Image (cartoon, rainbow, N blue to C red; front, side, top):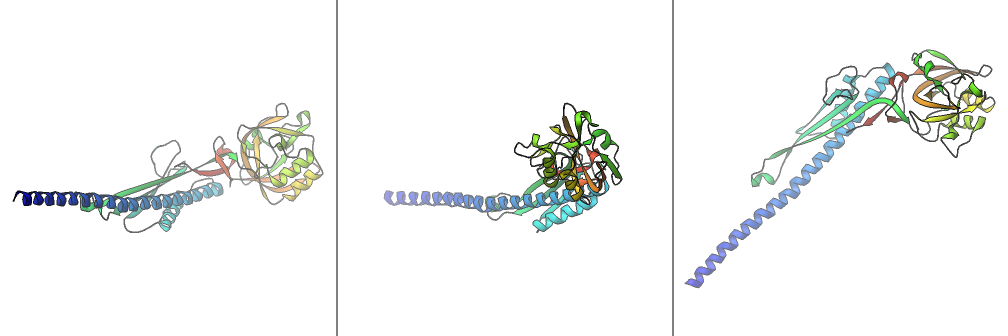
Length: 314
């Protein structure tokens, strides 16, 4: 009888052990299945808000360049549409808001709000974890932010070597036609408006042929605000005239520069202009200054020069 009793006791222990094992196995399985489901939801939600913020930022960027102000309502609509197109379903919601760069919370669609924030939220239904007494749903959230600002660094291939003095740029009115003479240094020591990009691009050409090359192809290295660039000596003709004349009707991007010092200028910002005409005899470019989107990085530039770009900051 004692032997049988011992067997019964062991059988009971085995049942308890099996129950604990099954519970642990169920928990582990639930963790894998439901954890994977939550991870996938978070990943898809983040991709959706990223796409929505970028799309809304593009609307803000374009409206700023086209009209000088942000179109927040249209940016909101576009951000919601693109987010939903990327990931949608039951329990998924999106919201966009706008804030100034210096603010930490959204403050509405005020005129200076240059950051779009897109928030995504999904109530994810769990499969196995509720069996263990855990909530049947978990809220997954994601956020993305895109900032619009003035250009501080321009990528290679975009800037041509014609410097515009800060004093001239401060007086420009976007959309009006301007006459730009070759005189950021007012002829000081034979230096005029052309910049020597070979001073920042070691393997690049210099002189008149260098100016022609960079007018045709743009600077071959990034250029940033506060960077110093040497000027070219002399009033250049021949190949330079040909290169500028070929740009008539096109939009080009130029650096805004300081007064010349020891054959060197400092980059203060960047401007966009459409070349209307070029008088080869007086070396005067007739151009229309515009507000434009420019490929580059935000930081250090000035809004007064009218070139903007965007970046994801979260």
